[in-house]
Length: 247
Ligand code: GLP
Image (cartoon, rainbow, N blue to C red; front, side, top):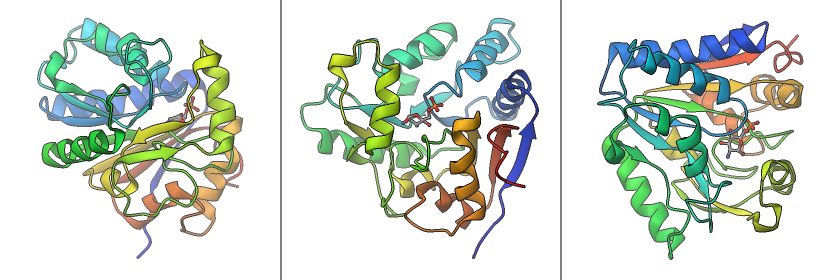
């Protein structure tokens, strides 16, 4: 069975960020105890800034919200500037009133990554995710989390190797390039698909081919994000550049 995601295209980056933030704000307002899966990357930075503003203005509170991140590099010191844990602290966690015990992310310094992955998977499944917000990998990696080309649709949270394209692009963002690692712990595609609702964000020309492959190509493991076309309650939020290969 194939489903067509709801697709929303915003003309500018500012409108994209506002629309994406509004989705999360409305979700928190309708369920202040919501369980969220959240992404990292450049794409959601504007959304996070607006969520922090909404919390500062007391429009929403993260006081009862639970966040489970999608992924984390391994091995990496969670305190290192390039960890996703640091990214989350800088962009959201330090700016909102979330309770420390309500934010979860795989431990980049776990001595046994597979054990860490399994216990993280159990945690995510037991909590149950109401809304998962996802980004899209670079080029034709079409990854979500770090589920790269070839990942089967029923994968659970596990240790993975980054695709060479992902590694090349992500390394550019590393402050300490010498400490770049090519492995990560990621929620699996099966884990992500258990979320009640999913919102995928893709911004910029560099995502246009991936978005085209996702929405117009076959549903298969060459395109991990295409798993989202096998279910309901998926919304895809694009800016006009990311949507440019759809017509
Ligand atoms: C990383 C993360 C993904 C994220 C992607 C997109 O590879 N593992 O979860 O969606 O980056 O990043 P950006 O928004 O910077 O393009």
